[in-house]
Amino acid sequence: ETGVTQTPRHLVMGMTNKKSLKCEQHLGHNAMYWYKQSAKKPLELMFVYNFKEQTENNSVPSRFSPECPNSSHLFLHLHTLQPEDSALYLCASSQEGAGAIDTQYFGPGTRLTVL
Amino acid sequence: ILNVEQSPQSLHVQEGDSTNFTCSFPSSNFYALHWYRWETAKSPEALFVMTLNGDEKKKGRISATLNTKEGYSYLYIKGSQPEDSATYLCAFDYGGSQGNLIFGKGTKLSVKP
Image (cartoon, rainbow over all chains, first blue to last red; front, side, top):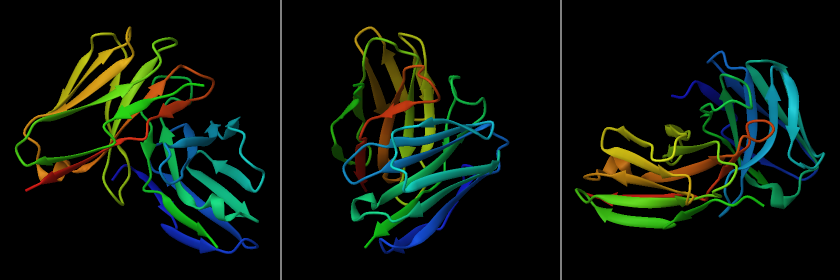
């Protein structure tokens, strides 16, 4: 247990659906992250929130919309996705906020399939 | 474009064998190197954060070394056990804007009993 939980663990959605991924960290950390792992590719950073403020958007398409209502929760809202968006989406958190040498603690991920 | 390479991609060893794998990263703008262990269907688990050239860290049977001048790190597992089976990821931290870690694709280790 890393102290970072993600729901749902698996999600299948059609291209016209709207869904949300949820991440919660129980570690009192100040920064939260969304990563994407596509098949045979390394983890890619999508978004960073530092003290609830979005500080990084790594050229992610607007069909992915993050939300961080407080320092413990992070959402990724999905709408009109494409089949190539099928991937494992991982959430992470770190203590110091981005910019420090700090360990990121990961959730188990949501396996997303877009039909 | 910053690139992190890990080799081999996969590795099959017998229980009791010792093994090692490599992470190569840019030798400039080095800030830190992270190693993670990722078992299937679980969360990636942090193993080490390494910052100094020549650093060596150890956790049980697992150890890691760091050479920032030539841009590589080795991860060693002594006397592999089936429970060591996992994907081992390294991530290069270049001190970029906001917590940007550049991950390698990982080395998938399978240990047969």
